[in-house]
Length: 338
Ligand code: AMP
Ligand code: MG
Picture 1: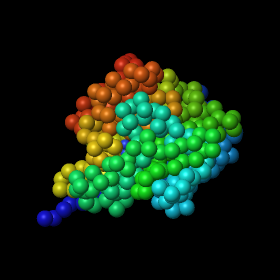
Picture 2: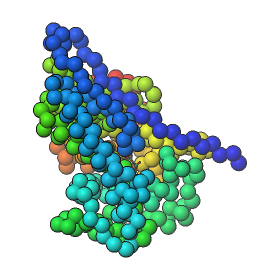
Picture 3: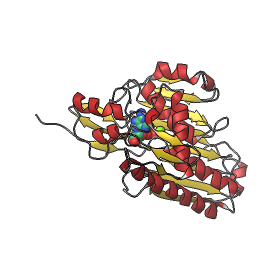
Picture 4: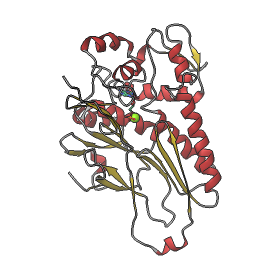
């Protein structure tokens, strides 16, 4: 039987929508903009004002530091060290690596445990966007499921150590590192006096202030089924962050079936209830966790779960294109296409 295999990684296009002309824009300062490929995606930082250039460079240095610490592909990274010593030794990690794991587990405890930083064995097995070409058997999945459970991890907050007690356990911070790094980049830009900026991490966006012409940033949300389509638009006034997880971002197609990079730790398989989830929120770290978690939970359970988190909103698109938004977005978002 011929198996059709395709590994596709699509950088998510975020459209920063250009508003109408205003007198302010005549005097608006020029942007300083830099792009780098980090954390497996294109990171673009745009900042305005006299302090923009050194601030953007410092923000990128931090992004890079976090990339090096969390890179699963580098055997010398801290995450790799924790994984290599599973079942043997605890590992002292950088405070930021510890903070990422801690926040993931905290939020996941309120989201049915579906955001699981110990998802690594299943990520490796499926290999989506890496070596991925074959759909694993149920027996292979069943063998690994007992290794995927963040409650098994032994964390010592005082010593900042992480221990994976079973050989074969693997942590994977791919669902949070980019969001966490975006927040750190934003902190650095702010600390260096930048009052207008936009960090675009492969389509996940966090802004500072307003556009230099005084208008709010307006961001388009990628349509999960139309490559250059925008499914919603919003002005970044009440929230500063949009974070998306989608089945179109990284996937393989085998025998006509699409398998994405997000895995339900309860089943070891791809969740099928949603094509994308965009979080509307004021933290990139939390947005990154939530978007992956809600993608796993599906639309109904996600709406229920979000009731515990006032101010945290979501735009969810089903595989057949139905858009559901959480109640807090009523009147604050423009749905452009369904
Ligand atoms: P995102 O694009 O932010 O949704 O993150 C997806 C990435 O997170 C995947 O490429 C995996 O590295 C990792 N991942 C996949 N499924 C999960 C999960 N259920 N919990 C935590 N991380 C996951
Ligand atoms: Mg995520």
